[in-house]
Every structure is written in structure tokens, then in C-alpha cells.
Length: 493
Length: 123
Image 1: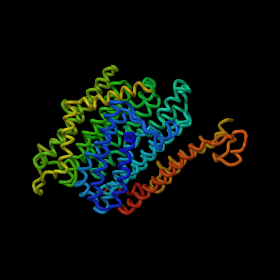
Image 2: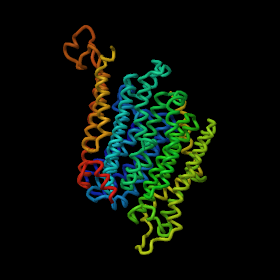
Image 3: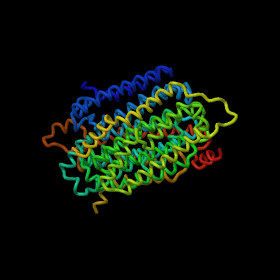
């Protein structure tokens, strides 16, 4: 029980080399599956413990807090931990068939090993309480995701991965500069201790230039990693050319973890919601609104549906950042809740893309003709995921939109409310294009018969469908966690 | 004239900006990676400068220092350690970048960005 906080990180890390040692794709998949499920179970235990007892901290190697690396888990960490490990646990059963088709069988053990390292990195960012450790884990997850994206079946995957590598490294370097400047101000790398030192030395109120520069670098670097609107250019290519499993996993987790980092730095270090709202909150509000509007409009004109969903991801990230930029408890609740709900719906929608490309071979809009009849279960899942994306009542997406609008009204921002609703309407347009093609357009004349996707793809997909509906009706678990996390963040330290 | 005394920071900023410029302006994938390396190296300089204390020695516990009656000033070793980690990350990034470039060269037959784009568009 004492060593519980480190377990979800260490298990995938140890399992990764095992996948390569055994060199058998079947065994590698089983190891990866076991590792992710163990991580998920431990994350659930951690979440239960944190909610019941309170924050957990764990000193690595027994070195006490401000000097050694500390893993610190409060409600926010536990929530993000659940999202990441939960999604990887759902993706792995799906991976076997999909990876078998898209990746050479000799490279499959490497694929699972990289996926596990990527999971380690993302979980590590989530549990650690040390700023530099966060950077190292961020680079761990990013480097493995560049390689994973480069494994995509088409050659454009390579250029997409290269582009992501360049932009991701610039972002990571900016984050490194920001952390360095914070270190030079506070003399500590422990995030909680940073907040204490900033307060003790009265650096916060005085408009300290180093502090402002540090946050400028951190915010820009993290915005690159989380693909906030003008810095999102790597995302559409990376998501559309990566192997299906990688797209599902990254879309559901990677950007959320970057948003978690932003929350941790902006609220955990400044430790004060009002200062955040007066400064950074106002600055990131504009790109967030622009993301919702522009990315949704761009999504409407895409022919590659995977690419369309990638642009829709950019828009949805806009919603999360919008919630955060309100810097009220309701706003933060909406943002954090949307991280969870978006993982559910985008994971589901990209799983549908994976199943369609498994059967049809590509996911252009024309490929969807007649699929409503040929792959009824897959397309039904798409419709439910689409409804959730639009924010229709009884689906998970509705809850976060509802809280977002509530937060906007609390602040009295009518114009923002209208933009949120407009974004949902645009989502209706781009989802409807696919639904119309799948159900109401005649299928191609001379085409071989396409069957329903295999069960091992359908079961994880429908698990997410059920989750989308369940968390739309009984939303108490994620809502409570998000509310608790938001309250903790607003209180500061 | 205090800004002259901060020459190492100016050096870091110069390296950072020139590296960044190379990444943006060059179309050759290898040159981009070199620019990226210069860019991230500048941060190492920034970190090391932070740890330096004027008139202080290296943070090594020598016999002379241990026996000296007055405590000696030494530079902060933590930024050095952090930068060792960051160098490893930088090497790994370069390795992945170069590996991708090799694969791009295999599949496209070129590493010039505009030629790659032209080949993709012609499909």
C-alpha cells in the first residue's frame, strides 16, 4: 500500500523491454495487456484511496520532499491517471487485430514496447510532483509517440512524425526553459514547494519579470504540446497518418496530460485562481475560442474522416482550455470533466475509424457509402459517439457542455455562450456528413461485400459506447472527482 | 554596464534564436535537426549559468576544502545534473529525428521539404 503510487508507472516501464526480449507478437501483446490492466486496477485503488483519505505522497528512494523526487497524488492526478490508464486498458484489447493488419509482424513487439513506454511517460507526468521529472516523462512519452506515428502504413506518416518531432521538441525546450527560470526564482523543483517559496519570498504580487517570462515559456511550450489553436499544426497530420491504435490512444490521452500539466503549473505553482484569471486566463481565452470556431469550420471541409476528427479534436481542446480560462470552480470543473468525456468520445470515434479502415482500407468520405447497412454495429457506434461530440442530452458530451455554458453564464459572458453553442452546431454539420453518407447514400455498385468488423474490435468499441451513455446519465463519479479537483485547484495551497 | 556582465545569458539567447531561425528557414531535414540541436543546447548554457556563483569553486569535496576552517563557496551542482539528463534527452531526440530522416529518404528519395511536398501532392 505504501508503494502504490509508483506501481502504475513502473509496471509498463518494466513490461516494455520484456516485449522486445520475447520477440513474439502474441506474447508482446499479452504482456502489454497485462501491464495496462494492472496499471488501471492500481489507478482505481489510488483514486479510491485519494478520495477517501486525501492526497498521497511518495518519496522515491526515501529522499524527503523538497530534495528528492516526490510523487504526489491528489484528486486531479488520480482523475487524469484514471483517464490515461483506463483508455490504455480499453485500447489494448482492440490493438491486436488492428495492429496485425497495419504493422509488419516482425516489428509488432517493438510497437507494443513503444506503446508501453508512451503509457509510462504519460502516467509518469501525471503522478510526479517534481517539475523536472515531469519534463523527462514528457519527453519519454513524446519520443515514443514520434516513433509510433512514424510506423503508420503510408509514407506520409514519416513526414507527419518528423513535423511533430520538430514542433514537439521546440515545445519541450520551451517548457525546459520555463522550469529552469522557475527553479532560478525558487531554488526548488518540487511543484508544491515552488508555490510555498513564491509566496514566502513575496514574488507573486510584484510583477516579477522572471516569473512572467517563465510562465510565458511554459504556456507557449505546453500549448504546442496540447495543440492549442495556432500551435496545432502538427496534430491533424500526426493523427491522420498514424496507425489506428496510436491515433486512438494519443487522441484520448496525450493532449489531456499536457492540459493537466498546464493546470498543475498555472494553478499549482501560482496557487491562486484570481492572479491566473487576470493574466494568463485572458490570454488563452482568445486562442481557445478561435480553436472552437476555426477548427470546427475546417473540419467540415475535410474528405479524410480521420483528419476531420483530428480537427474536431483541436476544437474540443479549445473547449477544455476555455473552461480553464474562466478560472472559476465551475469553469475548471467543466474543463476537467471534458478531458474525461472527450477521451471517451474521441477514443470511440477513432476506434470506429480503425474498424472502417480494417474492413474498407481507407477512411475517405466516399468509403462510408452504404456502410450503415454493411457494418451496422460500427456505424451505430459512430452515431452515438457523434451525438456525444455534439453534446446531445443523455450522452457524456452533454454534461461537460452544460457545465461549460453554466460557467460562461456565471461570468456573464453571453458572447462566449453563443460561441460554445455555435461550435456544437458546427459539430452537427461535420458528423452529419458522415452519417448521411453511411446511411442514405447508395453503396458502390461493383464492390466486394464488406462484413461487420471482428468482435475484438467491436467489444472495446461498444464498451466505450456504453461508457458514453452511462456517464451521460449517471455522471456522479467523474463529476465529483472533477469538482473536487477544481475546488482544490482554486483553493491553491 | 551590468548587461555586459551577463554575457553568458546573451550567448544563450543568441544561440537560441539562431537555432530557432535555422529550424524555421531551412528546408533540408538534416539542417533543421542541426538547428534544433543548437536551439536546445542554448538551454544547457542557460541552466549552467544559473548554477554559477561568482568566486565559487566546483562542487567537489576535496581534502583541502574539508580541512579548511572557513566554509567555501561552491557552484550549485543541481543544474549540472539536470542538464546531464537534458543532454541525454537531446541525444535521443536527435537519434529519433535522424532515424526518421533516413526512412523519409528511403521512401521519398529526398530530404528536401519542398521536393517531399511536391511528391505528396502529385499523388
